[in-house]
Image 1 (cartoon, each protein chain N blue to C red):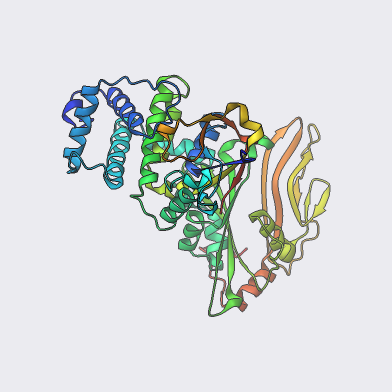
Image 2: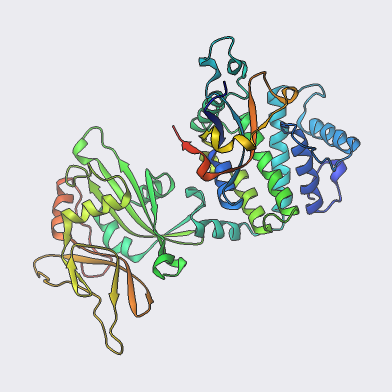
Length: 162
Length: 305
């Protein structure tokens, strides 16, 4: 049976950029469980590894921000990803050159480090069921169920910051 | 030189940022949904990764999380350098500052006469103001544009608790009024609010703390036809062709030293918008400050207010 809720961990910085520059539309990668470690050994969610498990991503980001670990792998991946996306969005005329400059400045400026703190998105599944795109098993980091939602609207999820 | 990678030498900043953005997006985890465009040739992609690995001293087969993380770090740094090479950073800071999106530590802090004449004399230290602005417990941005006030007059309230473990009765919260103009924050009022003197148990926001402070030390003021201790987003109709006294003290007591704090806004359809207005009884406030060992300092050549 599929779960009623979906979970996705994202840094506050990514949330802010989607809110301010992408019309509050959010691209997320989500899972059916918050913490696959709490499931039975043979449940499919238990097969979600730390790299995809929302709880592990949350703990990793929070620890990195609390200890000002500027070499955290997940944060470096997000910084380069958002920088590259800003370039691509501007090239596609989806954002202005000023917006691109502002995004690149914010994500690369060390003074914004606290903006990499994690937020948990809790998404009621019925609202997004028709737009869930299962991540092909070959591309998953695990055998657990993972999905992409390319156009998650702000009213379709709740935000939790711990 | 925009990039020191041999394959990108001589390329324009725009080309460098575009090529590195494509390389980055190809390297990132791919959900495998839909076709991912790949404008880079395999040959260029492999050559760039090889050059980056040499630059970082990474072995060609090292795909450890640490190695990949260092490559991402290098890519974002190079993209940022190329993209912002001809951009005025102060302009970006001004834009972000005006939107309230600048990181607190990036604002330039200036001190106005109100701070120097009233608050510095009452023991408020600049380094504590700076700590409050850079790492506040909470911030409240007032939005004057909704009151017809130019965004240049945007005021923010910053709050930070300064705990005194040895003498808990000396624990206080510092409430700082700041006007943002681009990336400059101009400090005006800065009140030390001692928890042993003012009941903050129900205060959840900086505005709540201000109200609790005025409840204790406020004096009656008049705004338009109304009197009260505290006015927030008040409107005063202006009579045509007449001078309207929009603010004053209805019953000034010559024995009490007090100051007025009022921020008028724009006039919309003959109505004056007031962001906030209140008066403070300094005689009472200063007496409480003295209990905490804070003595009023002499003025800077002006009459004490």
